[in-house]
Length: 267
Image: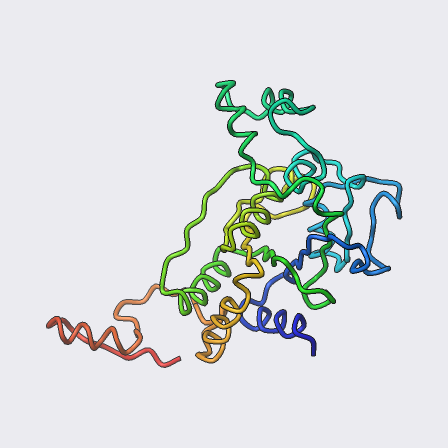
């Protein structure tokens, strides 16, 4: 079993997700791109949005390679470094008009401050289902339910001892789920944007959790902790019961505080 197959197997045990994690690599040398990777414009004469590439990977187990000519959505072209679009560059003023921010200067600042990869550094974007990826991913994207997200946050907390912070934008999820985590080396929670819903078939109750390469060892160490405790996403069962069984430390604390104790939680 390869490292990536083992990683996906652990995710499956912990979460029982509907889809595999999306393994994403920023490509500087195209010799790493598998020969059977789908290249939308070359292979079909068609363009797709980057979120659709993610969907083809997770929903249809496709390895997809996106070059500049494959894209059918404007923002990834800027933020992944395929085109230049800062102040004074072609397209900048047009984007500021349609970005949805009333004040022109605030709109310009917002567009100018998009998280960006260096212009021209990467040839393209390679995605594959994690268990089929024969490359080391720069980031993992896990499309999950809120309950599955909670379980992953529990796993991470065993390693960090801290809460996870994130910021949210209602659009450009293909950008915010990938570029800030890679540049900053931090986990991120991202709301799928309307384009992901309309064109990439992302469900209303799905959310994206990003694990950058810098955090993968930590993340999977936390996953191992929960698996060794037998604490998976399936461990949590809905019930409305008074005096419910609790982990033993609850009764220890309640006894110390002079309160009633009850049945220990035996998991």
